[in-house]
Length: 241
Length: 245
Image (cartoon, rainbow over all chains, first blue to last red; front, side):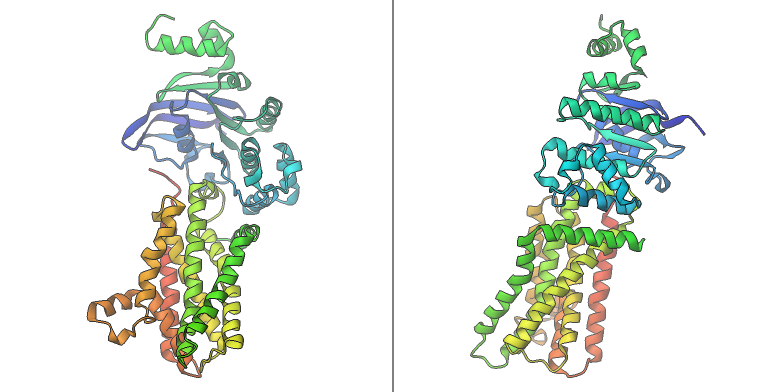
């Protein structure tokens, strides 16, 4: 088995006539937490759906777990959590998770486990629409964990979560990775980058950096990742660092 | 397609309805109130309620299911749940028929209540059986639901989805033979009426009103209603795309 979970080759994506991704290439190894970091509008939220196979690609190709992105065989192997929480606000947390569990199918034990994993056990019988924004998106995450996907794609999963819970979520992501799941997590917050094994920095539709956290720090000659990215961006555009 | 996924999708749609008590009350009570209104409207015109009341029994489920389904489906599209569902082992047909089953059940309850009130409290008289009336009413509901699923694809907001009611449903009600008998319509009006599926639902109900046993025309009309519903469902499934441009 190939050790590459996702291989992106020269991918160009246009949305509404505007070029959003300018020929991106990268690979993501299996069993790793890869962070897709960059400012909003940089192309993160276009690359993720392209990898999941719900966004058309103008040219280039994307290979996921050994098959073309979006091919029917991948559907149960890839989990995807969008930035807008995609669960039913007019159902309770438990009803939501139960419904998605029935699709795979998963049993009640799994239902309670994923609800506990995202810290929503106490709110399990509340309507999702009545929860706070952070809880709402955790309900969405719980549904994605159900599929026990080999690749889990998470768009900004930690936004709006309290710091303690954010730590727990990152802990949980690493537990999953150790168990063999590949995670691709996007964030526009640089201090989240330190939690990842590898980083892909995306800016204006181009890859600015693509390496392990340690290598990015070393290349830029600073421990501070925010500073490191600034340096790399300036180096790239030819300005003095 | 999977029976398990289809059933759990139907159960989920019903659970959503159950949490929305006000909508359930509207679905069940509004037709009853309207039926009573129509009864008193024609109180002094003997025989008219038998005709109009019977037609209403076919219209309520059609109109209501059209609105409920188009809004439910639009929410599914705009909330991102549709996109997520299509990344799971769920098949489009599971979703469409799951909705069909759930709302079909809701429509059946509504049709039984409305027909019960009309027959036993308001003394509606038909030559044919009340069972046939309920069967046709449920098929009307499925037709309304299928059209709602399809037209929701062309709405970008709930505001727009509701506007499809006057655009798609009202012309069918105007031309179905309720306001003016079909034989009296001018040529092009008649042609329009001929291509609207609701026409056949109403005609089928009138057959039950006029004849004590099911007629060939009634079966044909029922067949057309079901055929139109299946066609709309097939078109609706084309609009459920996994990939965005």
